[in-house]
Amino acid sequence: MTSVARELPRAPGIEAGAVTAVRQARARRRLIGRGLVYAAATLLALWVLLPLYLITITAFSPRDVVYDYPKNIIPSVLSTETIRFFINAEGVLGSLWRSVLVALVTLVLSTIIGAPAGYAVARFAFRGRETYRLTILSTRAFPIVILSIPLAVTFIEWGLYDSIWSVALMHTALAMPFTVLITSSIFVGVPRDLEEAALTLGCTPAAAFLRVVLPLALPGLAAASIFTFVLSWNEVFAASILTLRERTLPALVLSTLNDSLLPFRFAAAWFMLAPSLVFIFVIRRYLLGLWGRVSR
Image 1 (cartoon, rainbow, N blue to C red):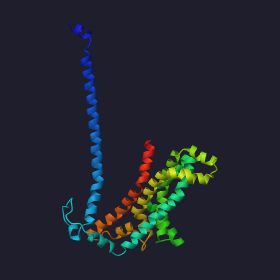
Image 2 (image 1 turned 60 degrees about the vertical axis):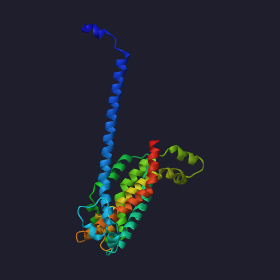
Image 3 (image 1 turned 90 degrees about the horizontal axis):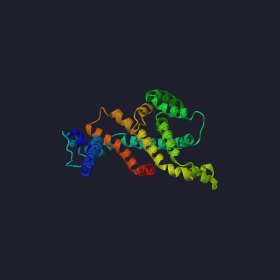
Image 4 (image 1 turned 180 degrees about the vertical axis):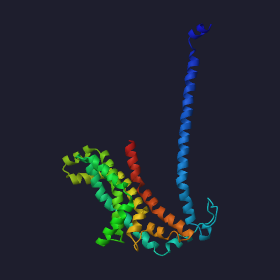
């Protein structure tokens, strides 16, 4: 009986039901996997955004509310008293302005120097190109303290110590490897045929770069500029070593943090976060253009 039953053909309805069950099981597993990914992404976003939210609501709370514990997730009173307390502190406005200047100078220098270097690495084949890339990246392996102290001595001899130029040059050296590597990767993605077509239509190499290659590479340059600005804005160690009176905002906050009041600390944290976030929101349309072009 058993052998006879095995030799009987399967009913079409049973086979179709088995296939449907397998498909449903796969769909459930796929749905569970996607749900886990979304849950992990949500937890990661909350891990990043919740401290930013707490810092923001505390910075815009009255000074006496800052000391309340536990903190209210939804503030009952909003005030600029804590922010005004921080702004009116001695040296804050001057250091804030110097931080903006240093970040902008670093951004301009790293782009002017790094973008042509990235273009050369992407477009021209020369001996030792891969070694050059590795050498550029390896410069970030040196601790900042090894670079800052000799540079401080050099800047003293050149008369640049305790100025925004010394800090900007140091930040440019820190950001240059990533600027070169990011821009070289972007220029590789720009079709060479477009540049050659511009040359055949009468453009010089410089004009082809400015009119054809550079507009297509703007999203990548925007990404490099975001990294450069944030790096310069948040860097504190080199700024503390290379300045005494003309300190940037991170260096000033670090030097006065142990002796400052709690409202000062929360307002300082918000002031350190806000410009970077504003800069990212302003430049994000270039990044969206880059992601859209890559996805296509």
